[in-house]
Length: 351
Ligand SMILES: *Cc1c(COP(=O)(O)O)cnc(C)c1O
Image 1 (tube, protein in one colour):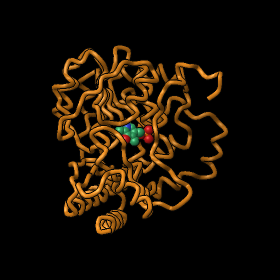
Image 2: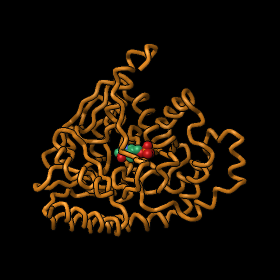
Image 3: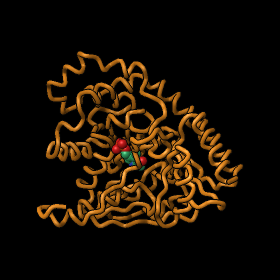
């Protein structure tokens, strides 16, 4: 750290991304990326002509992309916001709506706490129940912003649409942000509720189910008023936050929805296989609606299993955090990758 750094920022604890090692070829089951490449039609859009347009600034209004998202989700373009990954949207939302504080589950996406610290927002961590589910009543009448990942990470457990609606309707004077990074793997989206509740901010990403983690594209769907607020923040920070290629590929991705839906089905079926196989090995596996499973075994510690799998060329994610240190979060890859994972775990337990 230099002596020039703002002392307020020096004391922040930053988010720790999952490992992206370049030294060795690992089977990466640690950051919930898709094992499948973008659709062939998407890749073909990266033409010389498209690259030539990089000379110009990108469209700050992202009109084509917003229109495509609006028609995919059955809303108007004025109900859509796009940004450089959904992390960008979380950042904007905490800044825009967090002034009276924010509440989120004690076990959830690590970035919520990082953004709360960063923006100097007081936060309340609400404990998940013993079985790691959200108790909806704990979120009623909070008088602060509420932020919930659905399905939650790293547990994979989903909220029903009616529970989500209850949380939204019981906090009419504050924004309820539902982070739907994993919703395409089997949970119920709350997008339809954005027509009814002006305080609901539904956030999505192209990073998980749409094979575009490196392209950085997130979106939000909400009332026109909330979207206008987010636009104001964006135009005060970085009007060009979604680059030309990502806008282009985002539109192409939405035009190839069927390909991504099929991939989600493959992942759901590989998830079922993984859950069954791990249970047969004596693991406790939380009921997941995401592209990962959260699992622990009485026979080996979470840390030990993570390290042994890494030696064997498979990366999973271990969190050294209270209540969950016995678990590993394992991204669901292809069926073949999951069979290999199960074989390696079988070996480790036998050794
Ligand atoms: C991966 C993830 C995100 C971030 O996604 P990006 O769009 O890549 O920034 C947001 N929320 C949750 C819960 C995630 O797991």
